[in-house]
Length: 231
Image (cartoon, rainbow, N blue to C red; front, top):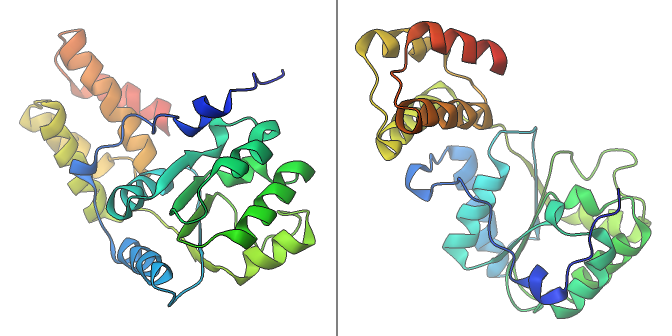
């Protein structure tokens, strides 16, 4: 299916992904190290940053936090037709910090890889690229010059949250969404929370719908069914 080609002004003004609350951001030591590298790159003490990790570990949330703290422009490459990438880079300010989330959607395509490499050479400020796979993986990048530049960047993995971080995220989101759970429900759910932040947010979304929109009480049998679907 051919993706609709967006006008450049529409691309430059894309809204950031919804559903990510900076209020409930849980910052780990790994996050702090990545954010420190971003700060160093702005002061010429470090190279550009490439962050990679499995689906759902919080890469987009981290990217949005970085964009907020450092006033970077944020682009979700998965929402932008690769055919428009050369035109997009012609309009990006090389002096502004930029985050390219899901940049792997633009790779292995000659025109978009060439445009990214050409723009990257002229870039004068912070740059964070985010993908599921390390740029060092075989065949991940086709253009040799772009691969060399990516390999020279600071490449850091993102592993997600530990048990304590998951619990903190869950409790914060319950408060934010004003979801009230009975004690027996909390006792059942606490040791069974999804360890993947994305799946946890999916569970919270359906809990929010069940308890607020549909005006139903969250019960243990209902949770058992939902957790099975997420497993």
